[in-house]
Image (cartoon, rainbow, N blue to C red; front, side, top):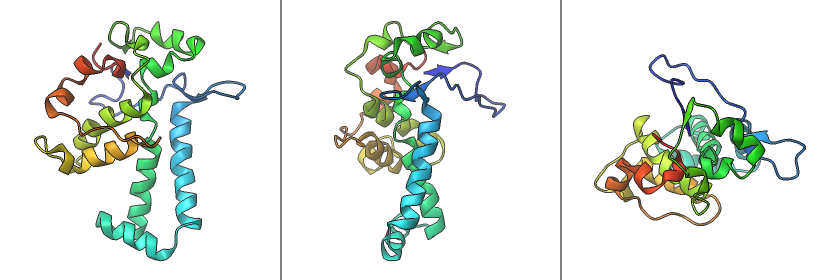
Amino acid sequence: MMKRDDGGASGHCVLDVRLWGKQSGLSRPYPAMCHLLDTGAVFQALWDVVLGDELKAAVAEALDLGVVDARSVVSFWAGLHDLGKITPPFQSQVPGCYKPIGDDPAYVCAQGAEAEKGFHHETASHWSLYPLLAETGYPGGERLLHRSVSHQVAQLLGGHHGLFGAVLNPKRVARAEDYNPGLGWQG
């Protein structure tokens, strides 16, 4: 789901805490953005306490970064794992939370996108993170997505429940809303 005019050319971004990320067993839904930030912070604590220096160095070397930068990058990735929860099919699982968003004219989504129950948040993370990471400068390659760093990271994060999506088709990615109306893009 994308809110119009937020995060545009001005660079300002408004975080909408109505978009929930966790709710089961809680007294009220927990905002998605808070869940993403929590996950990144927990990853950093695990990196600091659980990983040995050799493993930290190996990860850093694989990423061609210093250890401090590798920690930051991988914790950023961890924080992105549930970005796909910010989609109509996921948000509509709690109707009371979704109604204000669904009724908000500032948000756009394809007609009936919330009914796409087969479109899971981890798939949405894979499909949405590939172009977002590519836009931010991650090495890519439209013809060979299986070799694209932006695609590999998106695929890895989309597989955070243990099932990794297939390599995306570049033509489908370019028109993602036609293939996955549950993404809520463009409306």
